[in-house]
Image (cartoon, rainbow, N blue to C red; front, side):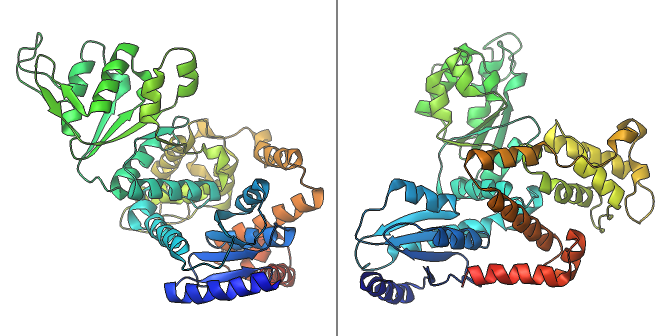
Length: 449
């Protein structure tokens, strides 16, 4: 390390101590044990493979802020490489920092988000520990706690769009009520009344005045489910009300004010709908200040068993959920779920209602019509998800040795997490010796020191 970097690290370390921020030095070893989150300082003019490897290992433990020191310009490609290696953000320091306010602000925000993600309300309604799901929950918690922007939730049917909307309400700053309007149930004749309300006598059958969704959501959250189903005339009315936060009841001449956070969900591709003239572009940009997409279950297969146990716990409140017989585990893991999490819940519910006794849930609980054909009982692996991951790595130019190493490392990390970091049980499940697994883990430790 040059004199420039050495001096800057000393300056940064003293500033970090005053700010209460933990810093680690890339290139000389990164150790963030017990720190949540951690700032990793990469002191270089460029980015080298060693630092990227350290960031990959460290980002598996915590969120990392990479702070790059150096007088020379850092290429944009190198900054993207740091993000690709797991850094949550990248800061550039061309000279000694006067203080670490920028670092401390980011770490404080990440710590708040992490606390929210691990909180009881989130864990009780959004089971799953796959990286893609945890990253989504971090984004949801951050947008809920630090923003009031409208959110568009997209994705396939059954992926949990309504769960995400409820989490944004629970974790958000808005408070108030959670008002849901299912746009698939709106008829052209009554849609205006459902949204904006009506006065007594406004139309045949309007025997009394009635509040609509905009009035009910005042001070809270308005969730428009399946917003892509709205007809074009109603989209124009909705746009005006969203822009001005005011509306008229049907049959009234006076404007009413309503302050709410808008959440929308759809299983349609609204960008394609806009291109084909079926959805207004101005409305799309108004409701999609931030977008999130709950992944389909096939993209988070490692969450199948945690979700199954979560549903069993809900079906048996007040007592331990039954364990899963290995054959049932295999059945749940190898089954397809075109209906995503909603379909998995239905499958688990069917198993639960056929279950007898207080022991493990066994294969006989699978309804006869749901049982796979004999030739389909063999484990279908490698499956399409692995094929897609390998193809993506090949397209990125990743060498075979790196693909093999990453696959092995991920398998070990997942099994250790499932077995509570018990080395002996993890080794047995992976079909390796306890000693071999210990050697592999020591190699990881050496990489981050």
